[in-house]
Image 1 (cartoon, each protein chain N blue to C red):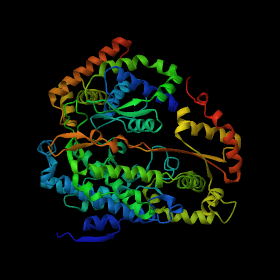
Image 2 (cartoon, one colour):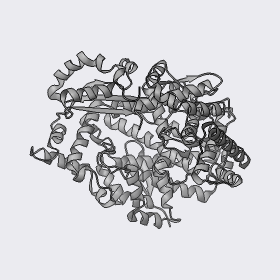
Image 3 (cartoon, each protein chain N blue to C red):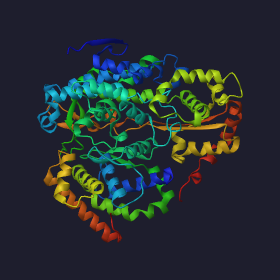
Image 4 (tube, rainbow over the protein chains, first blue to last red):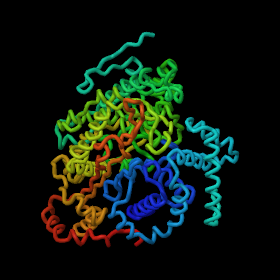
Length: 185
Length: 443
């Protein structure tokens, strides 16, 4: 189990990477991309995700982000025309630098996820996150059945959009397996 | 069958009305037990008026949940796209069923609370248990099941469970969008009526005026809206609770009231140290150091039994838990040695933790206590429908919400017998203790 500040340093680095890769780092962006970091690239962040608002959602992560704001390690910022983003403070970067070994250990996974998803919109992240959640939970192989299931769980996601999202997740998984020479169950 | 309406006078909502089936829940053992569970644990030792109980709070939550339901299902308040995506909202039989489930869930949402509410729940229950799980067990108990079955049509037990404890505490149950919204009416981050009632009620009983806000306006302006994550995106159509433009100020006042009440009441350092002394007492007084989890035993334990035990324990130094009971009954609580502050946080976000570690090394582990709490919940971001029917996120619209701080406390308490000595010790050593080199992990 990671030390609190060690885990905070990973979250801070991940958010920095998201920003560097085109995300405005809204709370929803952080939630969905963190789900991919934990469940697609297997970084042991130890957040408990359920299917909730806009797809996979972790109450632990939500509270952790609020805690980091209370600690003065994240701050709320608006960069028009985008919505409010959560960004690391200068002090957060100083804390992160204290745990560089841990950060380096997972930096490739963070880079992979943020490069892949940094520019995605909330809508795209919701669909892809939900697709990955259903894939991991049901192990459904048939993509058309999977799309139907996504539509059943999230009626505002059309079956066509769900199918596209599932295919994107499949591609992301394959790319990750090639890049990291691993096999995701 | 004609439903008889019962009215109960209440200092917050004036009259709380309930029908005969809700009255059955009111008369049940799990609900009557709430007459003996203080809403704010031992806060009455700091704010003497805070002797109100979970009983009246739960009635208030039911009353408010019904009012919110009536507002958001009023045909004049439903957007056409919401009507299309939530079929339950227009089918009369469905709305009538869910209104009843919602009010029952609101009544029952706290029945699993341990004596003195939240104090030390994590340490005093077996792993995997919390008050929400106890609430679920009680809602599913034969006594309550008989009530759910007696209603026409019978209420599905799991529907009540879902709305009472929500998706975080019931991850094994699937929530539809409609059920998620109904849960949010009770326990939601932004507009939960649990929160609305406890702020108003706690404010009234403690005499701390900061908890008051215009809840009538807030309730009347709540709407189900498509969520609107950002102006640069196409809107996602996942429905959620939001407000009309005219309700933004009352929403701001509500969330500010929460912030102030946390600062002034819920996180008051003397209140917090009494919670710690109580936890230590219970750890020694309870059989095996934990509360029972079977419903029968749970129902027999209330604050009354604990208060009697505290007084009884104080009669003999040899009684288990004497030291802690003595600190509570005779007001010999630990004193505040250190609290988090912005200056030290800049040096070390874990400053309190390292000061506590140094204090127990210096004075012994029985002579210092650490208390940390961070406010839970996410950003106060919810959709707002403007007068021209555009939907925008609240954080784009409201500077007060954007600037609302995230509240947190860290307290290090010390035995009053060594308070002056400890103060001197900390004055000399603080800077050295909190330097970053003391942080754990993998440098």
